[in-house]
Length: 253
Image (tube, rainbow, N blue to C red; front, side, top):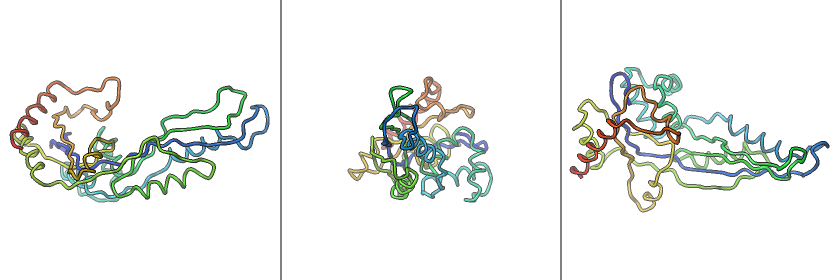
């Protein structure tokens, strides 16, 4: 990414934990024309709205705040914790991804209830993609449970850990040298990934994990905005750059 005329290459040193959840509300089934105060759909919809509109607090992690400090340096502004929203506004499209590394998130993604318009169903379900910051898993689930309310229960579709390591060591030095050999003006910056990778599995074996996918991207390309999209792609020149960097990296390792 390019900020203030400087090219920053992001090295993943942390990633959020995963909490894919199914929310279940149970009520009394009945005819849609009658009074139905014990309505599972209503209970579920209210819980989903509370979760979807929840304002998660900014929490400091080493990787995410290291990125913000480097971003401020590139923009020539002072890093101030109280100005994070203003700073994100200056980052362009990448703010969607880097901003998500500053807070836990919970996005409702699926709803399911009923089979007929004039029948109140007994059960309604929703699915939520939850992601929690390293060190804040307990806080995350405490918030979620408070938002659910007493009539809605949660269960896991998938649950996995958050991971984080430090931005140092021989591998970091090799990554830096490999990038600088192709782009002497580069600055390597740690960051926290809002998604998940197989680093979660390798970390259980005591392995330090880094995300290193070197691409020299056009400044106006909304790369993060294409993730999981119908036209997800990278420019050929960016891929060629990455191949050269990875070849340098393997020679150094």
